Amino acid sequence: MTLTPTNAAQVAGEATLDRIAWIKLSSVQLPLATPISDAKVFTGRQKPMTEVAFLFVELGTEQGHEGIGFSYSKRAGGPGQFAHAREIAPVLVGEDPSDIGKLWTKLVWAGASVGRSGLATQAVAAFDIALWDLKAKRAGLPLAKLLGAHRDSVRCYNTSGGFLHTPIEEVLDNATATLENGIGGIKIKVGHPEAGVDLARVSAVRERIGDTAPLMVDANQQWDRPTAQRMGRALEEFGLVWIEEPLDAYDAKGHAALAASLDTPIATGEMLASVAEHYELIRHDAADIIQPDAPRIGGITQFLKLATLAEHHNLQLAPHFAMEIHLHLAAAYSSEPWVEHFDWLEPLFNERLETRDGRMWVPSRPGLGVTLTDQARAWTTETHEVGVR
Image 1 (cartoon, rainbow, N blue to C red):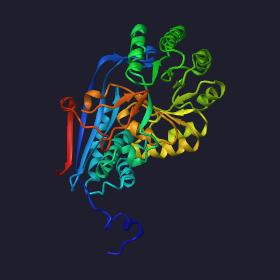
Image 2: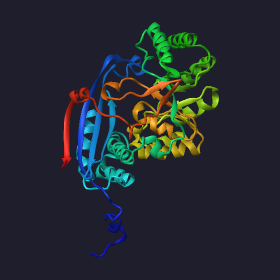
Image 3: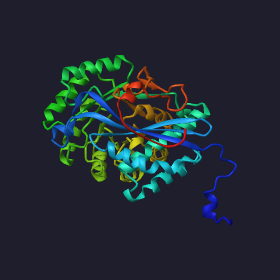
Image 4: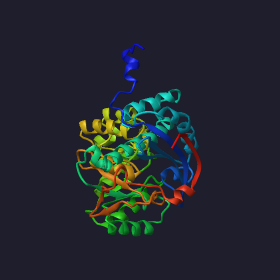
């Protein structure tokens, strides 16, 4: 057979030392102990959140190497992610697991008719993360070290103790306990329909934790432009690290105007589902702090592309949620980032991340350093396997 440049590139050569033999998909429903309400609930746009749906991908190779990755969905979309993953998974069997960029493209094109954003790339993300976990495990390195860490620990802040449904006295107690447990900063939710409620809660937390403890607020996209300007000015006195998602996630020009007019930094990006969508924020100077979510934008491969763009534009980095993944990625960012502490996922994993001195520490375990608990297996509602173990 005569090989053209196109099909020659698709034929594995001597450098291929291993191949993907099997893949297991699991749909897991994580129940939350308390229904969660942020500004989207108080404005009537969403119902309280009672569970988080996870798509787990476990895969193994002919030589016995294994990796695990996950994506997630809140309130809706979990079954769709699982269904899409089930359709595209077979294209990986027999492939070299080292060729992660190539495999990301192959997975995307396997489901190209539904696009390169949203649910489709969130399903791809779980495969991509599993491949990076496998590569780091095979190297015997934590993922951060495989990527090239700039630090062994990252500044961290807690979000889960400051939701709008939580009474202020409980928020204050949560803040005190959070700082005592070695977590460096506190983020609380704002965006209540009554501005006075927001300001009173922020004032109470600032008084409790003191003037020097890092404090952030998150409006979850619920302000319009005039409200964001008024609230931004009113919040200046509290010395916030950032105001998060003050406007609709796709309002790049509005975010840019707000960032230019306030001393308090603007952070956003968590709801975007591709590098291209984040680039709109970057090119409009719409954020001081970019907040990508690896499971939402297509995995670690895409996150690294976005991190390069962010670094080139001198942006700060504070990845959203999924600290088990983002700790490693934040540790590999050139300038000092933040990572978000959520304890929601702890029932899924046998391991715990260490927090002390206001920082979260990269574990010494290879890969992501996580394994699924028996409880996670018990919460599994559907599985699917391809290939042969």
